[in-house]
Length: 226
Length: 221
Image (cartoon, rainbow over all chains, first blue to last red; front, side, top):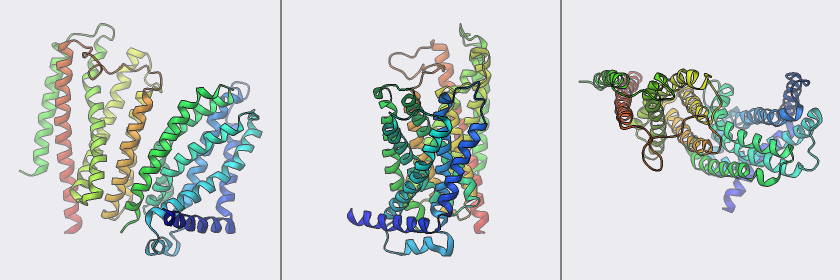
């Protein structure tokens, strides 16, 4: 078990160091996120719909697109110079590779969300003062679900034609469910409902995370084995 | 007789029997009191929906077995089942609104059951897009198996969620606690239609499987 985590950490660290040194992907994903939030701001009639009614949907649609963009690059950077073959030829276990990629993706998406969330609060004037902790919990739960499935699929699509186009087509149906749960939970949080009202949605999110984390780490070796 | 020819005969028999079921449904089955003649579409809609789910479950099972046994026939079966399932899902999505307009007054609503069928349809389309996008047959089979398994698990999740949302859609009437909630004439017609849809599914899958086999022969020879 310790060996597995050591391998995962090695992969994640490699990805994050690469990301930190170039910063191109991170920067463009952050800019993309802020742009989507801006587009939403202009894509509605503020006199007709109250901002707060729209806020949960705006937040989650933005985060879904941002996660998709981030996941697209997860294995893309292993394509150059046959780096993926190198990784597979090394003593690294496929499960360690999956976990490492998962951790790196979570960190990447987490940073994007850490910048995106304050911008969202600012742009849409959302009162998060007293609910910020549970809100971060909801975001974390949903993001784990997004990234668990997304990491598996992104490993598959890189060796196909039109990888960038294929990932959303495959992944979006899988993201719709956690997205629905997260929107429901967020809406209740922002409306100041008691926490007991959203515990059902949180349980569903947690169940989704556990099932798909387990399933993806079970299936991932089949996507990279030769 | 080749598999494709056998499949063609099975499908033709299924279509003829479907005609028979509709003669029974229109002439010898009572008209539903509240929905009127619109309810007759039920004998296509419900069996098509059940067959779609069956097709998706079989795609997932074939995928799971493929990953262990590495038998390419399982992959060809999954390919056939997914494509036939897509057709049945399309039938559900077309017949649903035709019934919904007179009975609900709207073609479409974001009701949990409608949404879950749409989910199935998207999953099946995505599955076929993936199939078309991978050139290497071995890789394609493994990727599709992985996606098929994920799709079945997701469908399970969607079903679980469906019960948490308020719904406009009629509740299950055959498989439910207690006795089936429809008169025996209707139940018999429905069950006959289920049988016919299974025959149609088998016939279409046989033909599609034969095509998949021919393609393999073409690339090898």
